[in-house]
Image 1 (tube, rainbow, N blue to C red):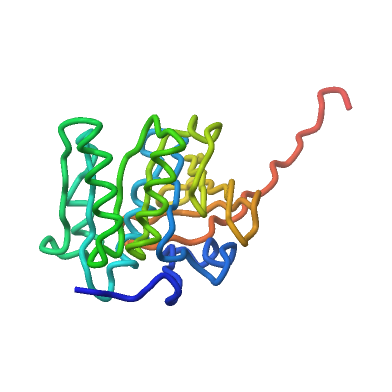
Image 2: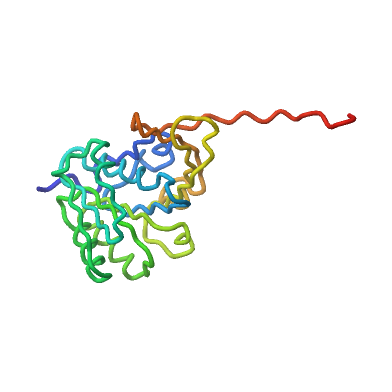
Length: 217
């Protein structure tokens, strides 16, 4: 079935503080978003999946292009996405991966596509960007942090890094807006990802350590 076009209401990141840094208060349909991960288990994929859930809230399916076996379905089901609205594609080679991701982005019945992407050349990146624009889809590309040195056709580029929890329940993450077309480049914020309540909120500020007196002062 068809769905809303790219000029419709922005897709929330499920994190109000991050939404405020983006033009229009969210992510634009018909664009690509790069999620650069700064460490294993850093919560990057969880944040991207929360966006996918918001994009698919009204109708359509989430397509996951997973050639590395990274996708963990039970975690997505706990977020509230019905299993019948998730399509997992496991390509057998690079050519199949590029074709599958291109077709998912072009499909008007797919509000969001999630994929793990490495070694992306500029021409293929541009192809994905045009595909997302044609299908009014939101492409969520999870990439290693080293990809920040490569050219990008994404409208938004985010670097997510784990932070010490400092006794705060949940996972503390740093989110850096490396690129945001029409928004605030270079902005950063710290959030806490609560896996139990499924919430994402600003991390409390850490108190400054008290300086002890030097011996003999």
